[in-house]
Amino acid sequence: MNEVHEPDSRPGREERRERIMKSAATVFASKGFESSTITDIIQAAGVARRTFYNYFESKKEVFLKLVEAYFDGYTTVLGRGYDNLVLVLERDPSGTIDAWRELVLSILEFHNENRELTVLVWREAQAEDEHFTARVQELIRMARERVVEEFRLMADKGLLVDLDVELATTIINSAVMTIVLDHVLRKDDLDLRAIADQLVRYQARALAPDRSVVDQAFGSQVY
Image (cartoon, rainbow, N blue to C red):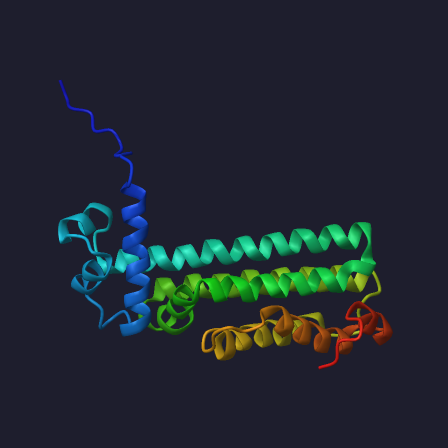
């Protein structure tokens, strides 16, 4: 009779896997993928080498899992923001700026809470492997398509000036990621809501047909 191996569901197994992944993210972000070793990872995680191999075949597999974790998390943030914006546009277009601001804030918060993953994707993954690069490019494409859809919906509601949606999308996405890479990842104790407010106000004043609507949405805030 053949022995049947059931999945290991012992308490703590998932926690150990997460600890290894978090430690790997810290090591990769600090030393870079090429300079990092499995020894570095297991020492940071406080586990035996055998334990590492119970979960991963190589450091490259851990790296890929981390890239996928970033990919999954960011797409979830973008998807929720898009769904909320569509709902607002359908029910009460006057709340569009607030919805847009909350989406930008959620993007900043995601990257602030996942700094090491962000470093891996934007400063490591693109340079290390064609597959990683393809996944990053897929994420960029997906994010861009979301914003294009959002802008077209807003344009249909008369909430945007006459513009090239594709060009505007490129500018908006570039601005958000520049803030993430140049400010969020490099500084602590940032007021992310204030940053989101300032960014969206600048963008909305450039894109909205009626600037008074933008000023009303932001009250008496001055930047």
